[in-house]
Each structure stands twice: as C-alpha cells, then as structure tokens.
Amino acid sequence: MTTEIQALGKMLLIKKHDIALEIHRDRMAAVPLTETQKRNFAKIEPKILELRAEFIGLFGEALVEHEDKQKAIEQVREWGTRNGEYFFHLGAPLKEALRDTSFYREYIWKAIRKAAEESPISSDTLFEIVFIIDPLLDSAVYYFSLNYVDSFQRSMENARSAFMELSVPVVPLGPEVGILPLIGNIDTERARLLMEETLRQSESLKLSILVLDLSGVLTVDTMVADQLFKVIEALSLIGVRTIITGIRPEVSHTMVTLGVDLNHLTIKGTLHQALKDLKFYSLS
Image (cartoon, one colour):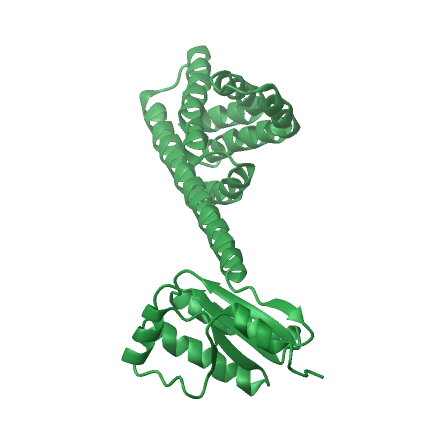
C-alpha cells in the first residue's frame, strides 16, 4: 500500500504544473474580466500559476511522505500563511479565493482516478489517500482564511490609526501659534491619541500657544472633560499655553454640571475672537 501511495504522490509532483494549468483555465473561464483587468492580471498570472503548482505539489509530497503527517500540515500551514496574505494584498475577495478549493479537489482526484485506471489500486489504498488529501485541503482552507482575515484586520487597524492621527490635526498659524480643531466624538482611543499627538506636534512645531477649538465637539462626558484638562496641563508643562474656543452652551452646561473649574482657563467665545486677540501678542 505504501508503494502505491508514494507512486501516486510522485505522479502529482510530476504533473503539478499541468494540473495547475487545467485548474487555472477552468477557474478563470468563469471570471468575467474587463480588458484593463485582463492586462493587469496578465502581469501576475505566472506567479498565480506557480502558486497553484506549488500547492498541488504539497499533496504530492504528502503522499510520498504519508507517514509524516505533521510535516504535511506544517507545509500547508506555511503555504496558507504566505498566500492568504498575498491574495489579500492582491485585492481578491476571500469568497472568490476560496472558490478555488472545489477546483483543486476536483482536479487532484481526477488525476488520481486516471492514474488508478491505468494502474489499479486497492480500496485500502484509496481510503488512505482520502484520509490524507481531504483533511489536508481543509487545513489549507483554514490557514489561508485565517491569514487572509488577519491581514484584513491589520489593514483596517492601520487605516484606523492613520485616520485617528488625522483626527488630531495641529495646524500652525504662524510663529509659535497653532490651532487644534476637534470635531466629532472623543472615545477612549481618540482621547489617548489626543494626548500623544498634541504633545508631539506642539513640541515639533515649537508652539508657545495652542488654540483648542471645541466648536465641533457636540458632547462632553466625564472622561472627555478629564482628558481635555490633562492635555492642557501636559501642554503647560512643556511651555505651551492653551486657549479654548467654541464651547457650545450644552457642552458648557455639562462641564459645569461635572464640576469642571473653568476659572483658571483662557476661554474665548469663538475661534475668530481668539485669532483677533492673538495678533496683539508678542511671541518673540
């Protein structure tokens, strides 16, 4: 039985490129592409074909060395890790990438059946091959999907971080003067970033005065108020004076209700008023 299994494994290794090409042609025949998409796909098509052949080769190796099941699983895990990430960066939807599974299953078994017709194998051998190939293909789907999703989540987190950084824009208005317009809600993550980015950018821009405009902040709760005043205190420690503008009446009411002491703060009704007053400051 071992000899029969190994012979079929060697057959898959020898024919892996031919099988890969059959799979590829059949698979792509069902994918509608525009002329532009066809030209772009042609650039990566050789690599896709090589990845397909490599994948089929893994099943050939698994049959040749069928007694070392852990090695086969590890090779499939490595392939899935590498290519789940690769196909994500190609922009291929996961559901489309996973449709390949049925094509691999069909063509691998078609090749084995053809070889078995030419050189009959026992039922025990056939069942043993089933127990090798099908679980291995399932493992490949699992690792591929896992790493595709991981890549997606990392991409989303990077995009979110980039967006969050843009949501703390310290804009220089002139020598040593900057403005930080805050818009929208401030959650825990944005509050943390607010502290880090405001200090970093204020120091980088060598600011002496920062105008903190709250006209775009609709609500202020205890956490937000506490964080804002921590930012103001931290700025004062690095020599930056903060001017608060644009406090909405409802926000002002909330801050008073929360017991926030506004007496020690420099507050202007509007950003326009603050900027008008600033031109009389000597910042040298």
